[in-house]
Length: 208
Image 1 (cartoon, rainbow, N blue to C red):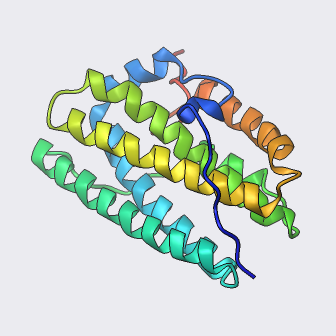
Image 2 (cartoon, helix red, strand yellow):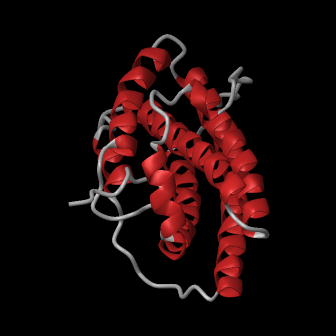
């Protein structure tokens, strides 16, 4: 059985986000540009692996699998672009611990089907939407060529969130909106509350 992703009418990423990114996070990100770039590169790898994991989890959904195959390739291209930008800026690559954002969102995903599939699609849509929003906030505040890269990535992430949201609508046409509101409330809390370490999807840093 396959499902096609219908077009999603949305006025940008803010259409599904319940709270804007705090300006304090933007200031933190600009002040810790190297740390931001390092986590961003890891996020691009994770985005590709998430798409591949969904392909393996739901192989019978051919429309979803084909769309995610293309998305995974694009995320890996983004990873390469970010790594090249890091090299140009003299930023070293290093291992980092995952932030709380994605981990806590995953904990909100239901374990039983068919709810699990819907939740995975909606969580992915929320993460991509938050990425698009933050690229839009950062791009005008960064110097070229990083500003141009982030502007382009913001456009791509907006397409990705619409893709995931479209498949969520097709997956559960009578449930997706109510469930999105529940997950979006948790996402907004994680993206706006104080965090110990700067991550691309963290809240603003807690300053003691």
